[in-house]
Length: 98
Image (cartoon, rainbow, N blue to C red; front, side):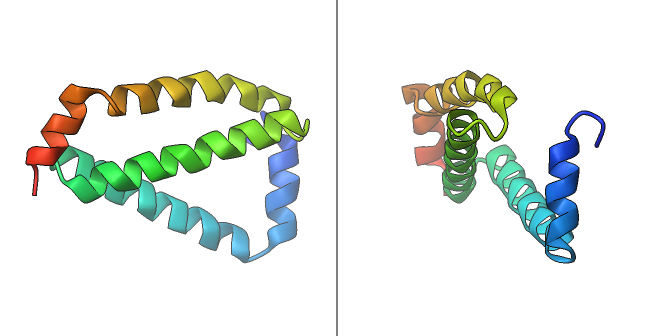
């Protein structure tokens, strides 16, 4: 994995013990969001949208500042996911959920 993105390896190495802690928090947030989505929970929807927005902001900043030019690929993908999640059908599904 680090061959694909050696800069990330370097950045995480400099973070020390905080890197696995940060990645564990992200992993738990994604798992919670996935559970909430599959169970049709409104909080899962909100958490998922929040995580996607954070990802979108990160991709835009990384691409705009030239930190990771390949991040620009993620922008339309996340935008399409957010567009789908904002559709009436999806919103109606989660508004019925408790």
